Image (cartoon, rainbow, N blue to C red):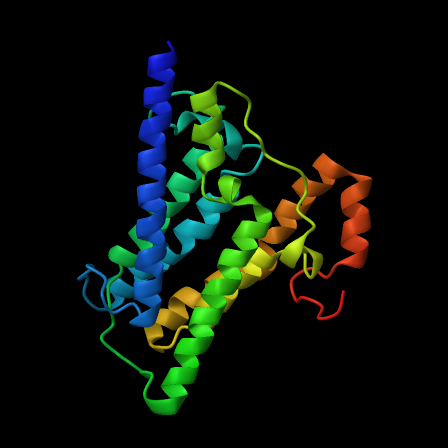
Length: 244
């Protein structure tokens, strides 16, 4: 029984972290090239329609799986069973596969509005790199084990409940309540290559980063009650305050 459980945990660790690393690399490459590397080849308006579907599928499923109706489906999605314990890992794996689908099935337009060059280009690359560092810091402050999916398979490996941790309030979370969404939006906004494809992807996703956390905060309020309400009253929502 222990061997089967650990086989399931190890398999999910390999699947989740491989997909997560590939998704991060694919996102960085896609944004750096204005989404001109996608494998999609649909003609004309069909390409734009398919791209729009790829844009929408990520925030819609991402939010649904965390809702009261979506959580049972999340448990069923575990490819090796143990859905309850592996839910954090399955969630990250699913999100990573969604990102891979969006970036690699994309139909490029072939139109480039702006490519980074010279001193201005160097500044753009610097801002793009800084946005990625901000996002990594936000993930770290939120608990990298949970954000990377490791919390689920590690709990299964040790045959213990998942350590979800408490409400994050330290680091970047002391400056704003949703630094992960802010970091994701900054990565999108600072992409150095500007194309119609980048605009089609970034505008809806940045909008999701501004609105989507509202549902997350409702869950936090149910879980943490007065503690979250006090935190919400003193810490800004998305735009960080400079002074503590």
